[in-house]
Image (cartoon, rainbow, N blue to C red; front, side, top):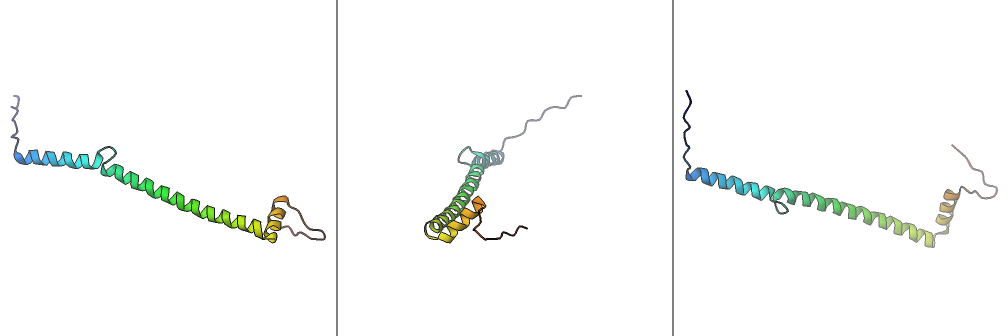
Length: 96
């Protein structure tokens, strides 16, 4: 024996619930304007801001090095000696 298919009644409550679920789904997942994509854009913005802050710090450090190279002869000597492994006359080098 086959069961007879009973048609379900479409009520106002079911229609409203379905419309609400669809509206929330669109609000969350709508391309380029939904809440999901908004969250991704906020995360991307914070990553870019962090990269900008890191670049600013590197820029300040580089500016400090430039100022030292322009004005401090001892710093210039130190850098040259480190990069070329040169020593002064009568200077003893202790190796570890």
